[in-house]
Image (cartoon, rainbow, N blue to C red):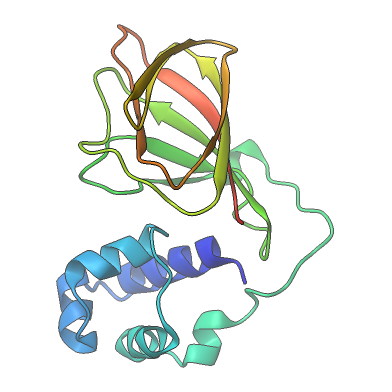
Length: 184
């Protein structure tokens, strides 16, 4: 199942219905923080939570999940079709451009990440799976556990996601990286 598409669908439906995270929290019994993490694909909701969220959004669980298991053999995404999102907002000012959000049920999740000047996640975070990234523009400091790597255009990193890490732009210009998350 395409969990990123599920997270995006939940967020889109909530916004279409002009509901706040707090209103959904009140309706579901889940915390606002947990709902934010679900919408930002930081955690995957349990089936029970998914049912509660669907009911709060006025759809069935089947409608919420419809089409998320489809797997076309090829998906072409035009630049104008990229989906802009923020993960871990407001703890992070990074802007993600989803490059394969229309392909459900995938093993990799590619993004272009914009790292504004002076921006960073307030605290390093970890996630399941592995990640690869290459700096496309500017300079990025990559904090990985207790190590600091100074990266410039063309430098690449392949790392386990389960170790706390973050990207920091200490330069004078915005930076961009192509990042690919892979599931285990």
